[in-house]
Amino acid sequence: MELYKNGFVVAQLNSNDKIYDSWPLSDLLDDEIALSLSDKADEEWFCKYDMQHIVPDFNFAKNYFDYCKIINLPVSLLLFESLDNTITVDDIVEIKEVMGFDCIGTVYHSYLQTEFNDFESDFMNNGVVFNVHGLLHSIDDVMSFIELRKKVIASGINLEDFWKELPVRISIVKI
Picture 1 (cartoon, rainbow, N blue to C red):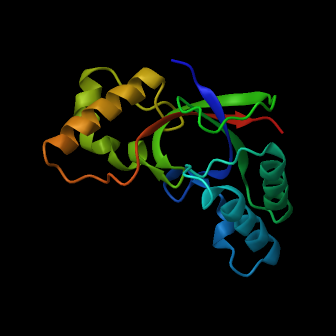
Picture 2: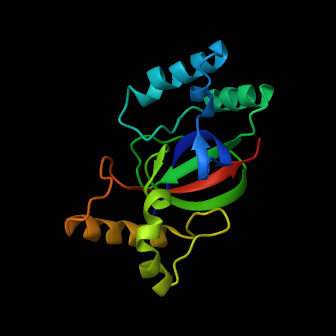
């Protein structure tokens, strides 16, 4: 399976019981620069296209990252890669660390993070476990999660089903 570089996410890692908390400036309602950066992301990408809040513009993501650092928000610049080639980037970036694989609806909602416990015994029996980052080791593990999730939904169990499941590899980009 070929993974396509979809773009970048600025996130606080291990924040608020989440593996990553994306686009943290959107919470700063009294900071004009933060609001301006958040508005630009909404206008340029998030509201304009049917996308998972992954920015396909390295320079914008770097500016967002830099401003977070200026105001002492501990963030990382993440590269998201998926099987979806609708929006791709060709920026050459150095990967500091591959964190692992997630299954998202958007970067604000990880099906894996919110629902893995519902399937944990099924996965433990097949040797599928979280890595040190709280993500899965391989895309095959994510595909197994999606397959099991779809079976459970088809059986009538009420799970979040707002967005299509998107398996993604998440890497920390060296800045």
